[in-house]
Length: 149
Image 1 (cartoon, rainbow, N blue to C red):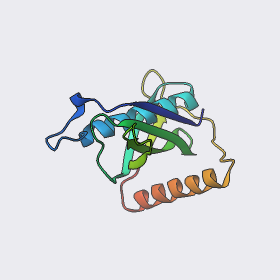
Image 2 (cartoon, helix red, strand yellow):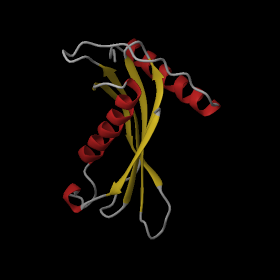
Image 3 (cartoon, helix red, strand yellow):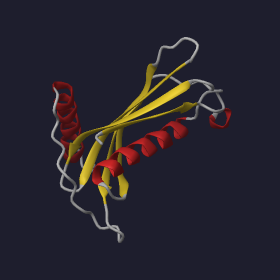
Image 4 (tube, helix red, strand yellow):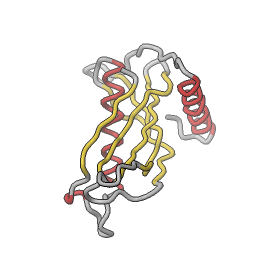
């Protein structure tokens, strides 16, 4: 499976001091969706290796319906680069808006934590190819800046 979408309601237990969903909670949701996507692709346990370019576009309100979509963008030998987009909206209005997005890298590992190879992902549509190119460009830029993911 190269993508997964988690859906749930933003609960009052996730509130920050401003009355909205805490940014750390959103990052936890991103990691969980990314893990589900990576693990289903690798068919084994995976660990988070890098989270980059996280962008918060707008807050999530308590009671909103939240969607966290994780899509495989690019694979290395043992790593999976996953694009995650978070959307939310009031269920009465029906419109979902992008709230957060980022790129997250997972590595497939054995029971001792050693990296294991993953099946290569081959994008099939123009949108998937563009996403793969963006992910690769982001990784190349991060490596060039010394932040090797």
